[in-house]
Image 1 (cartoon, one colour):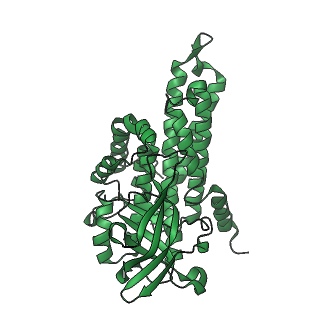
Image 2 (image 1 turned 120 degrees about the vertical axis):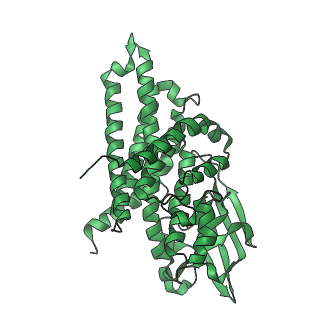
Image 3 (image 1 turned 60 degrees about the vertical axis):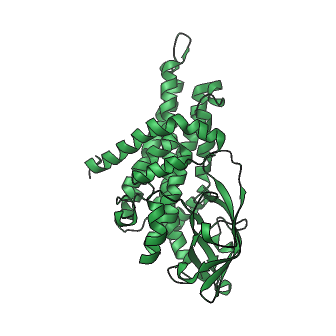
Length: 382
């Protein structure tokens, strides 16, 4: 067992860290204030190979793997959590299912521009009544000649207001229950009957759009079915497993940003004639953050390694996402405490990190659902 990064992985990490420090950190606060989608940044990340990092170069991707994905995404998220989740969704929730389940024609047409950063992708699963229970969705797709007719509304879709393409889950056979769910690749810019609904005002990750996708008799070509009819739920569950590695990596990056800023502030802020870093109460907070974040990184790298090896990783992805997001939230709370009043003010990034961290405990499956997945894997069918 070797814990050292190879030269290639170290280069990925260093490249992402340099980009985060020089490009993202200086603009992250302004992006948060304006809620602006960082289009130029996404294009630049595509040029670095990060918007489709595990997609083959023949489809415009980085030609790397999921270990590289964890290393790159955690650094990008350290610089800007909003950019991190845009990158995560693009990779895990859009590029992955199209790459794994798409036909050669679908990959060339719908994967290449997104993996290369020229376009943005999203994933439409969640609905008002279907979150933790995806089988509760109401969106339907009915075959009419050479087209599927989609009707329904998707909620809380990351990148939904800016995406050019989407993978959309819908019932093609409601009577079959969850076995009647199918997935479709949808060209959102060229689909009559599609519109963007409400764009949410959020606590955090505010430069990342979260939107409602509305389909009213929206017509999608028959050949845009992803895989076979009825395979949607299986595709969805595998996709979400990878997505949890992405969100865990985002959380890790937020936690790393918190720790860096807390350490720096503790070394500069003086009380009672000495830096507050000299006080055990502060030292313990920093130590606890560091331990939890290192443990989260190891869990994420294990889950990514298993995925790269083609082995089962559902439990490990759930563990990594749950632990990393809890670690990030705990670090952010303590980070605000270390900075005291300044931590609560918008003059410092710390309050933004706290707002950004919370969502990582919720999306890609709440941490309550993660615990259920872990327990189900431990106990088996009983």
